[in-house]
Each structure stands twice: as structure tokens, then as C-alpha cells.
Image (tube, rainbow, N blue to C red):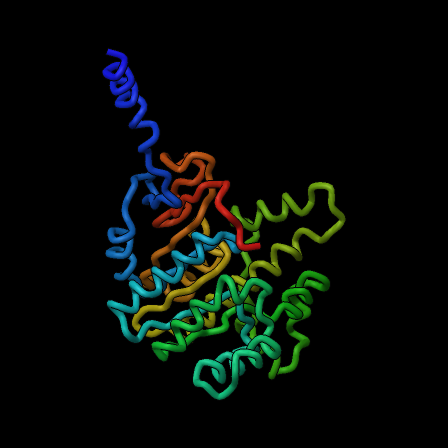
Length: 285
């Protein structure tokens, strides 16, 4: 009798122990759960795919590689672009991709991020292996800092050789967009920094990344950027649409939640697909 009781108790407890602990879940913008295959079926129809990442999230970086591989399967002429490389690093990046220089030269002569080896090297190595174009899309940080310190008009004083690494001037900047408004509000809270210049510096990054995407797009262009550069269909997305209203864009946005079994309301409609990752997931730095 005691054995039967223990067996019955075990059956009751078993579902609790058998629950899955997924590392991520994917949702549509409406909050409907979908799997990776379903997401890619839609994403592969786009001309430009914006993958908005959390820079320190290990699952995000793994998924970026999976998206890249899946797109390559359908589009062998895939090109990628990365916020993590500044436009004036393109020559060095090209030389590494075509085998002219070694990795040590890429690491020493390009302004690679500190987490390159853990997080972005797999993307570059896949591009190198498959002979794909990899485009350095970001504005050189010295010019973004120039906007932050002196305002966007200071870019007009740059020589022609410098201007080729930024979006063509003048750049339309709409500070009424919610993302830029929120950034200015945060900057003004207990700070002496110039909030408007901070937002304009961000806009110049977005505009420059959009510009180099459009200059280098092939059949499909996959772009990796911080989530704040494309969330809510703003940032890079907004600039792409301003230049080419008919361009087909698929956006992926990443969020963290304590419970990923249901997409929180504030995270809905931030992109076409939202990757939801547990808050306690390991960070890469």
C-alpha cells in the first residue's frame, strides 16, 4: 500500500519536474508564439533583415548565427552588415575576409569591440568561409562624438575623404520620433549633457547604417545592430523607408523577461518578430 502511495505521489509531482526550461521563445508582433522555422519562412522573403540584439546576450549571438545560416541556405548571395564595425574599417575587414591579412591584424587595426572573439567572430568566420560580403556600416565613433560635442552641423566642416564614411549630408533628423524623445528624456534626467546632441548623434548612427545597407544590398542583406537601433520600426528602419518606401524589411527584436511564457504588453509591436530570453540568462561580458 505504501508503495502504491509513493508511486501515485510521484505521478502527481512528475509534471512539475518535467517542465521545459526553454532558453528563448519567439513571438510575432501580436504576441503569438512561433518557432524558428516559421519565423525564417517569413524573414527570408525580405530584402533587408534587421536583427536587433542585446550586445551581451549569449543566446542572441547564437541565434544570429542560426539566422545567418538559414538565410544563406536560401540566398547564397547573402550580404551582412554590422554596427560593430565602423565604416572606415571596411578595407581592413575586406583584407581579412579575402585572406590578405591574418586575424591578428584585423584585431589590431580595426576598431573591433572587446567582445568580438566571443560574440561576433562566428559571424565573420562564416562570411569568410562562404565568401560573403560583410559591410562595416557604423559611423566612425569620432564623428558620432563630434555631433555629441558640437552638434550635427560640425560634420559639414569635415573634408570630403572623411564624409565618405557617413551618410550624405544633410541628414534629416526627426527628434519627435518616440525613440529619440525617450533618449533625450533619459539624458536630461539628472545630467548636464546636451540631450538634443545625444539624440542627433544616435540618429547619425542610424542614418549611416541605413545608408551603407542600401549601398551594399544584394538579394538579401542581414544587418546586426543593437536592439535600440531598430526597435519600434524606428532608427535604421525609419531611414531605410525614407530613402526607399517600397523596400521589404523584416525586423527581429530581442527582449528579456522574468517569465518568457507570455510576451509582455510593452514588448508587443516592437518588431515583426520578438525573441524573448530569460533575464537570468548568462551574459557574455
